[in-house]
Amino acid sequence: MTEPRTSAASHAPSQGRVRRGPAPASSWLVSAYIALLTALLVTVAVLEWRSGIETPRWFVVGVLALLGALGASLRERELGPSIGVSFGTVVLAAALPLTGPIGAAVVGYLNYLCAWRPQRLRARLFNASMSGCMGATGGIVYVVMGGVTPLPAEVTPIRLLTGVALPLVVGYSVMTLLNCLLIGGMARLVNGVPALSAAKRTLSSLGPLYFTHALIAFLFVVLWVPAGVGLFSVVLILGPLLIAQWTLSRDAEERRSHSRTVTTLVAALETASPYSEGHSGRVAALSSRIGRRLGITGEHADELHFAALLHDIGLVAVAPRLPQGEEQISVDYLASIGEHSEAGVRMLKDIDFLREALPGILHHHERVDGRGYPSGLVGEEIPLFARVIAVADAFDSLTATRSYRDPLSQDQALAELRQRSGTQLDGHVVEALASVLSERPWQPTIIAEHVREAHGTVHDHDDPRVSDLYAAWSPHPDGVA
Image (cartoon, rainbow, N blue to C red; front, side):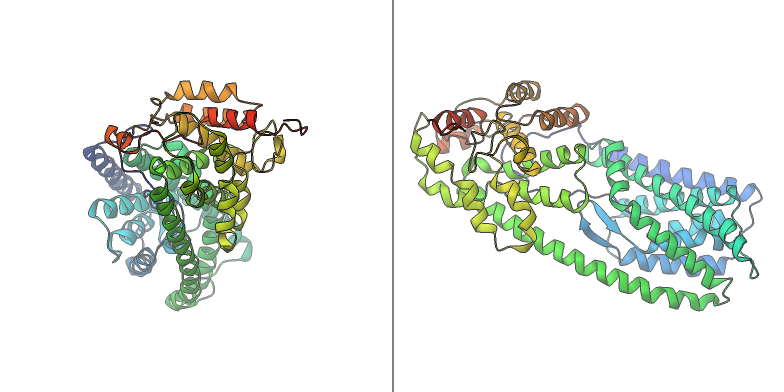
C-alpha cells in the first residue's frame, strides 16, 4: 500500500516566499477526514457481518495481520517522490480468498495500526483505516465476482483460475484504485495538491508493481490451501518477500545518496547567487508538472527533476566573473553568462546518475529561433528537457521579485511567455504550463525588501528580456552579426 507524504526532493526557499496553489486544509479537516474514513470502515464491516457473510477463521486473520504488520514496519519510503512500497499489500490481497471481506478488513486495519516503525498517531490511524477500507471493499468485489471463500482444499485448476485468480485480480484492482483516490484526498488536504492529479500520479507510478503483488498473493494462497502447505507457506513466501524488500532498500539508499548530492550542489549555488534561493526548487516543481502533462514519467521524470534542480549550477563558476553594480546589462555580462550552462556540465559530467540530465542542463538557454546558447540549436533540435526547463525558468523569473521590478501575476507571465512562443520558447510547452496552472494556480514569489536592498541591482539572466538582449548581441543563425 502507498502512503501520502510531502516530497522533499525540491530545495525549498525560505526568504519571503508566498504559498503556491490551493491552501492546505486546517488540522481539524484532516482529522475529520480520518474520522470519516474510520466510520466508513466500521459501517461496511458491520453491514458485511449482518449480511450473512461467513465469519473468517480468526487464526488465519491473526497470522496474516502479523505478517502484514511486519511488511508495514519494513516499508521503504524513498523509492521516488511520494512513492512507498510495502509487501503488506501482498498479505492484504491474499486475505481476500483466505479470510473473506470481514477478515480482509481486519487484516488491513491491523497491518498499519500494529506496525512498529515510528509514526505519528494521525498518520497511523489514517493508514490503518484506509487499508481496512481497501480490504473490506476488495473483499466485497471478490465475492461479487464469484470468488471462493473460504477456499476448499480440493479445487480444480479451472476453478482455481475462475474462482480465485480472476476475482482476486479484479478485487485487488479496485483496492488499488481506492488506495490512490484516498491518498489523493489526503494530499489535497495536507499539501493543497488536486486530489485527482495526486491519485493519477500514484496510480501511474505503482500500478505495475501492484499487479506483481497480486500475482505473489495468488501463489501464496495456492501454497496455503490447494497445495496443502498451510501455515508453513508463510515461511516459504516470507523469504522471497524479504529479499525483494532488501533489494528495494538498496535502491532506496542509492536514491537517498543521489538526493543528498543534489541538495549539496543546490546549496552551493544558492550561496554563490543571492537571488537564486528557492529558484531551483520552484523550477523543478514547475518542470515536473509540465513534464507529467507532456507524458514524461518514470525514470525520465526523475531525470527531468534533477536537470531542473541543477540547471543553473554553472553559476557557481561564472558568478565571480559577472560585472557587479551595473544598471544596464553589458556585453561583458552577456558573454560571461553565456558560459554558465557549459560550466555546469563540466562540473557534473563525472556524476553517473546525472548523465541523462546533462542535455537539459546544457541547452536550457537555447531558443527555438536558434539564437540562444551555447549551441544555437533550432526548434526540436533542442532536447525536450531543455525546452521544458526554459519555460519553467522564464516563468519563475517573471513571477518573482527582482531588484529592478515587481513580480508579474500568473496571467501576466503566461501572456509574456505566449508572446515568445516560436522565438525564445516552444509554444507546445508553454501551453502545457498554462494547462497545469489552470488546475493549480501559482502565486508570485516575494523576496523580502531587506534582501533586495542588501544586494542592490542584480540582473536575472533568466529574465526573458536578457534572452532577447543575448539574441540581439550574438551572431544570427546565418552567421551575420
